[in-house]
Image 1: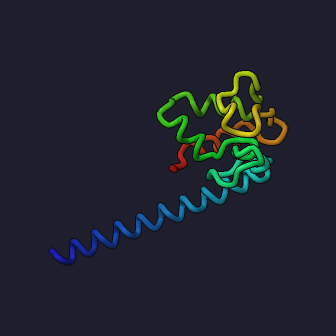
Image 2: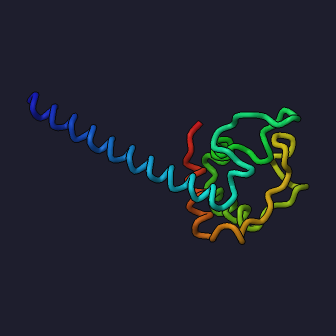
Image 3: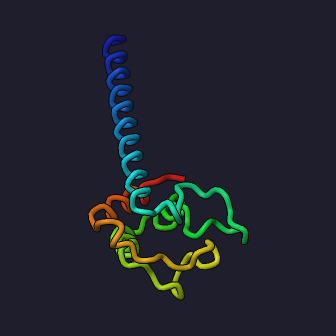
Length: 127
């Protein structure tokens, strides 16, 4: 009985380590994609330093984006479109919460498939 429990525990730990390694590789890959695509000029993963007006620099932190859209089944499609096409500054739902009010179009900086991967990764972030 003890050997079975030990084997189960060892298997569980090994699977957990593999998942953590896969997550770390995905995180690194997505961070590199975001940096190459210029996303990190306006966004960070976590809310941190504030701008001179006391708000987050330019764009919202991605963990805040993930929290806002948690449970929204259309978020991936909607945000991918926003990344590629930008948005209207007069309809921005981050207005008053971040220094920037509009997302510029980024279709020249990132391919649609990569934008979707990045958005899906962002939406999976936890606070």
